[in-house]
Image (cartoon, rainbow, N blue to C red; front, side):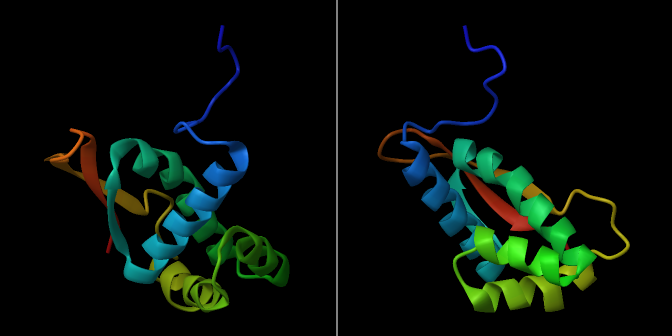
Length: 117
């Protein structure tokens, strides 16, 4: 039984999965949209939104927590200086998923995950 085992495993070990999440979220904040599989997008969506909420807090502790969850210090700066002020009056729902159909090679459902304006 899988009771109380929330989250996506994505067929990876925990360290590999954690690194994948860091990379995907960092690239989402860098480019403000990424094309990925539906499972990966749904896995990182909540984590990315929590980081934007941290950015809205704006204190030193929040900055250090965000730096621990992102790979690039420049992206941490962008999160706190550009992205978080953009969503200051928004109470959540910072990301949007567009379904793109299935990938040619293996038929995986693809989506475009982007930050809303």
